[in-house]
Image (cartoon, rainbow, N blue to C red):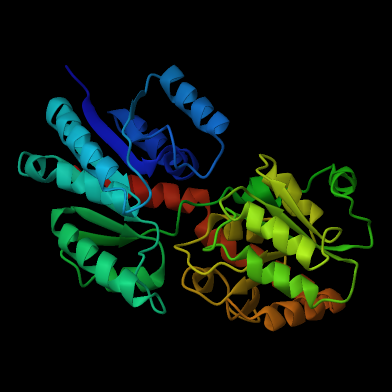
Length: 385
């Protein structure tokens, strides 16, 4: 007897690697033969080396991996059309019982491709990792993405949202069912465990023990807004305040140029991609997250689990995790002076650091991998009924 088949798909491979490993395990435990369809050639936010390793790992586990050239840019019409045709052919040939898709363009491609097969029993789950339309988003984002998501919700059996704002908005759409799941979950125990290499890791980046080290983790992009925090560093006269940025992205060259222009070469370090974030979190004294747009940020959850005091932008997703004055400080996303002031206030008050740390450690329990695992398992099981 053939196993029931499930397709896990997203625009780029890194999204499946970073956000869907547990979902794949759950589906396998429920008896599905799982296949992956995504762009394994370009567009991922991790290195190509990691993408290739992920592909090999999945294949070693008997999971079929299909490269579909889904782009991340909505203007790349050529690849969107070819991806839709390939995805439609794939769904027709494989007759999946379940398609779980995510990411804006990946979600559009997969749901359009599966439209005909929903009538024949294929169930479609779409996880919105943060709608591109949100309170404060540009009119262009609302005019473009809102009608697309609303229309495609009609072809969605379960629409999963990961923050409160999106959940309330999605309930007004036409999906058969709308669910809230607290992100992808964080391994609280893994990130809470302190590193034994704190001193050596700090020395690796040139930090002295007396330095107050700020850490940001995320793609170097306009959306992640590291530029604003770099400019805030120029307003901080205390030369013992250092800023470590972990990640790759299209803004790296511009950020390096800005660092040199502001005379911050010895105080702001772009470390590139690192696979030991769990250790690096314990080398820092605070976590800074100046992002302009988020769904429910994984790196912020990991920092909370590591017990770091938080300074974050006051935006959707961040506000689901941080209440100003409780788990950390929230400031307006583009306010360089507010970031600088918050850093110095936090550095000067060890009792405030301790309070934020304790509150964050308590709150993050509700966003644990175990909680998310249970909710996703319930969703997968319920969709079969």
